[in-house]
Image (spheres, rainbow, N blue to C red):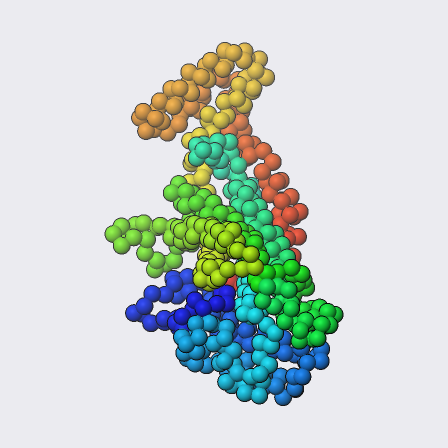
Length: 490
């Protein structure tokens, strides 16, 4: 994405006889792919040259209306073949496009790129693309949160076995567990919004960031150089501009951008791993289409391929943050060009990957299937052991001795555990308690003592409060885009 001579004049291969990134050809949305396309990039370069010329004219440089109009008329008239041939000769992508633009704007040729350096178009275009890419991601993330919030609200009271260390623990509810996912995604939404809003324009800075070339153009008029920077920044739609730059904007910005995307990847990986584990337990499944095939060898299989795809791509998304970390650390003095080739890959791939996982996760969240009977059966297998303390308390209230009761339940629990572990049978602890006359004072209370809803604490109240107080306010700015359904490329 950055300027320099590493493009080599090569055009993107589009046929079946050459490698193409699966992110573009298979997974990411057309709108995100377009943002990182050559057409969008080089059209933005021309737009930046036009904004610069307009601002320079307004501040008194001898640029005519005819030249401005010629540039406006040719923003989309890009001869990519000519640009590739020029770059092959010049080994410089920006100058190749200066010459290509000048070829179709002969009257404006002498004022295109006036006073600017390559990073004027390269870095400013990158910042425009990053901002617009965030604008594509944010509504998608908001929709995922909204779909999961609906799911959590509907199942706020449905008890399910909790797991710590992936071992049976106290009960929670399906909705409460979903809120764990939502909370992480809400943090991601806030992080993406923050980084997007904090993006600053590089602006009009010259070769080493000193604005010396523009100061010369305006014959030492410092105020006009300041105005030029401000005018172009406003034309590009940014509220803030860097006061200090080298030749490039600081590559710390790329770290910030890819860090929040990597964090989003971690959230998605956790959510989809949970879904995959629950699918194995047959408690929950992602959508499975009527004609979908789970395995070429095993026709009965219903593999969670969407969740697996999300996990696979999320790992890539998390790994990409290492690129800008290392790039920023090796930028010598005002800049070195070893950032360029790396940034062409990692910035685009990060957003295309984030776009893909959000599209896929929205599709999953719109069709999650829950199997309450399976959940109920698993609870029945584990709940008797969890209920023993309640049974002891009930016996004491009925006049029993706590220590005697504890010992009897200990013996019966070990017998029931042996049936489960050694014989592969069901947990029959409650049947053993019902058959033991010692526990007759609480036999009539056992159904109440074993009601799963009495073991979920304040889970349902927490769900309601969380959705009302934290989720709904975050989603309010995105209300107009909530009805958009997810579309998967493949």
